[in-house]
Amino acid sequence: GRSFEGLNDVLPPTFNQFSVMEHNNIIDHFIDSVGVISWKFFSSKSDYEFVDWNFSGTTQEEYDYLMSICQKIEKEVYIADYEELGSKACRILVPGYSEIYEVDDLIWDNSNRALDYRDDILNLHRLEDDQLSALVERLEASELDNYMPISELIGIAFDEASVWGKLDIGELKNLVFLALGRFEEAKELTEMFLTFNDNLAPRKKYYQLLNVLLDIELEELDLEEYRSALSRMYGSELLEICEKTISGEIRFYGLSETDLNFKNLDKHQRLIESYEKLQKAKRDFYKS
Image 1: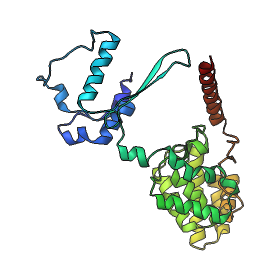
Image 2: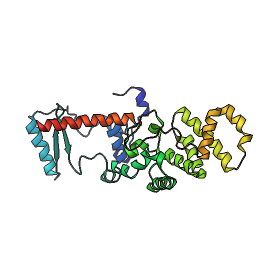
Image 3: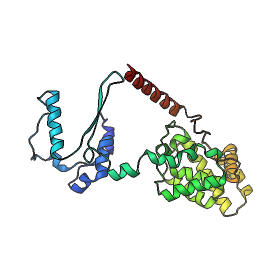
Image 4: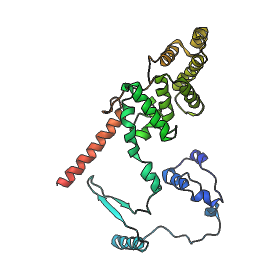
């Protein structure tokens, strides 16, 4: 279901059939039912008579009927049944017919890309400067969207309210540039963060002050002339943190240290525990 307030995000109908047929619109329908629909759905004249959802045959008869349709259009059908959890489930794949996402997306835009980045990102606090440079260069060369969440990129379940949970590719690159002392690149990404990123208020405040200190650094100004005003506006504690970020004493501020064993990542560890329970149930089912 959806509340009436939730309808505020739904686009109005259109007569533009290309917008309706566009593949990303189909994906929007699949994900959360917010894709655009045609005005023809609201026309008093219909192409087909309305038919209630129903079937009259037995399960086997309906199965045979649907399989005959696939055979006529020369499509292979792959079926897997799952009963190990005490309730029946079925997965059906019809290559070239049942995919919601385009085949190129399935080939190039899938979880395997995490393999190029996961180890380095989870070991971020232990990387040497040359490794950090290589990581940020790979991210730049990948042309991945700066607003893609890191959780999506590397397939890790972070606490949504944490800095890790809010971290996207653009902010990660920014933190790496800061650690490397590449302040011009950091300045550009900091301004982008402040303009477009929807983050927690303390995180925004950190970047607001950091943006000022980057200006002072790049313009070769004297911080002492502004220290008193900045302390009053942002607090001496945050000012010290930002100073140490610029000097390199603090790296990756706000990101708790983790590793390939998912240290400090309680949510992901719970997810793995749940997965292991499912695998145990599967093994026990096939043993019996």
